[in-house]
Image (cartoon, rainbow, N blue to C red; front, top):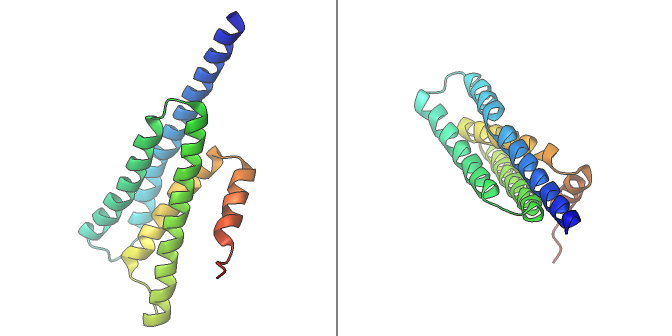
Length: 148
């Protein structure tokens, strides 16, 4: 009985540690990085910067809220991987749009470039929270060509 209580306390401790790591990764330093990136956007009107900031903050806040509401360590790890895949796919789609616009017009729309850059920072924040093996497997899976 005592061993089960110890194991349960250990799992609870690991759950709280992971929640703390997630919150730390997705809060302050990410906000600072976004400010730096958007501050380098020369010629952008304040509403353009604000729109990109609102867009990426919304993505981050939705994932963070979802993850922090999970009460099981295994489910939190699973949710973290799903959130990572979602953001990686989101970034990939933005880059696909950038490539298409570049091919069509010679250059992509700047707000799109800054959205992609800021989403990539979410991906980079989540990546260290996963095992190297998981990150590699996800990257491999997403890079596989679709077959008929």
